[in-house]
Image 1: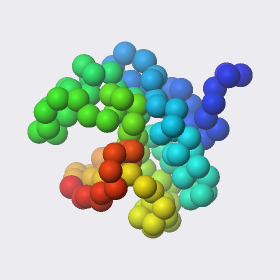
Image 2 (image 1 turned 90 degrees about the vertical axis):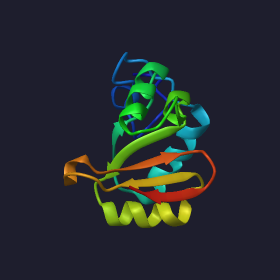
Image 3 (image 1 turned 45 degrees about the vertical axis):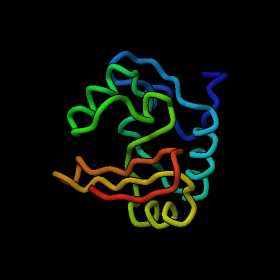
Length: 123
């Protein structure tokens, strides 16, 4: 893809799992690309952009209402190949929201990043 702007992420991993649209916010992605560069560890995306229909469905399964920041292209879920390094850097350098999801099997756990106000939470 000659015009793809993101060095560390592909369109396929950022696109909606429901419809294939990829409408990640450019400013958010510039910030996350810079963060990924600083951490210097691969970040494996589980969920990037979500169309409003898919986002509402996912949020309903999580007990939340409406659509969230994924449907605006302002959020990513995934995991760092080196969790300790990725999480430690994130706590000190990421300027938005960070959620650590610890439920279920190890393979189901992930970190949520968004460009909302700074806050940290765990589930």
